[in-house]
Length: 112
Image (cartoon, rainbow, N blue to C red; front, side, top):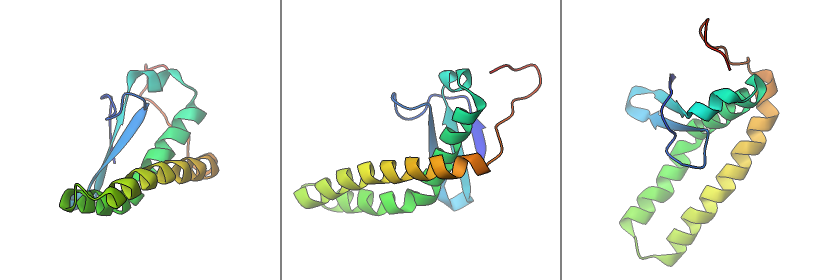
C-alpha cells in the first residue's frame, strides 16, 4: 500500500483508494484535513479505504456493464444503487474492524 498526501478523487472525502490490480497494490490518497482528525478517526477512514480496495472488482463489473450498455436504464440504476449500498456496507465494516487495526503513526516531527 502506498499513501499520498494528495486530494482524494471526491471533494466530499477525506481519503480515497485506488486498486492497481496488475501490480497488486493499493494507492490511498489523503486530503490535508485528514491529518487534523484524531488517530482513531484516521484509522477508521483508512480501514474504510482498504475495504473499498478489496471490493473494487465488484464495482468494476457494474462499470463495465454500464460502458457496454450506456443507455440501459436498469444497468444505470443498478450501478447507482450498488454504489450506495457498498458505501453503507463498507462504513459499517470499517467501524467494526477499525478498533482491531493499529493506530496510524506519522514520522517524527509531524503533528496531527
